[in-house]
Image (cartoon, rainbow, N blue to C red; front, top):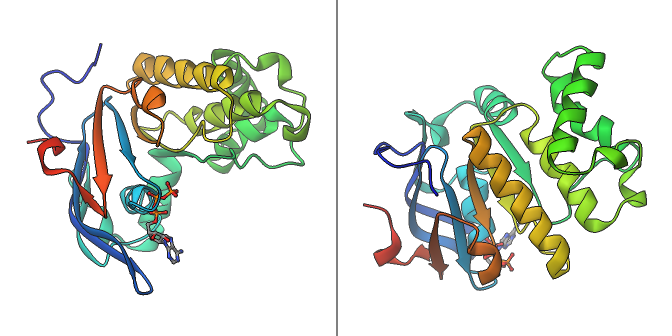
Length: 232
Ligand SMILES: Nc1ncnc2c1ncn2[C@@H]1O[C@H](COP(=O)(O)OP(=O)(O)OP(=O)(O)O)[C@@H](O)[C@H]1O
């Protein structure tokens, strides 16, 4: 069940986003809203602009026009310093291939955002261990990413994304490289943990079975969110 009932002001809102990569216009006026604690799936064909939308919402790239508002702040207008602080403290990100640091163990990977935030090493490792536990990979804590299965590495990447207690997790095809069993385990762990901690999730996927884990789904086609599915 969604824990977003009664919440009217979106936590994150994109309005009329336009973003071109060179001559390719990836977004042509896309609008979407994410409420606090909501799990929203963004689906659409390859090239429809899903990743570009996620990058704009996460403050990774700035739209050419349109606005992105996070908790009342215009993200698209923020100076880089404040943006990177927001990304570090309020947002977590997971990509298709996890992007764990290959030289570090799963535990040290998961502890990294805490160390960057100034948490002492021992406490960071303890907290990271608890998050690995929630994702069912504590036993793999001393392994490096290359020694883990794809699904285990993705669950460690999710632990790293959630370890700082972000308000929003951006997940771009988090199961794209996994078989269906590993994909199911990753999605169950992600949605269960997000609901438990009240974290909102923006989930990009082209897989209907993965989208079914979300509270709501919007579909991108040719850089625009299908009008009927834009939240009022
Ligand atoms: N860095 C870039 N340089 C040039 N064109 C780009 C760049 N990033 C995206 N594009 C183009 O913008 C359009 C939208 O790309 P985007 O990656 O947002 O789509 P997507 O829906 O996430 O696709 P996929 O499901 O295949 O990952 C595509 O036509 C793509 O080729």
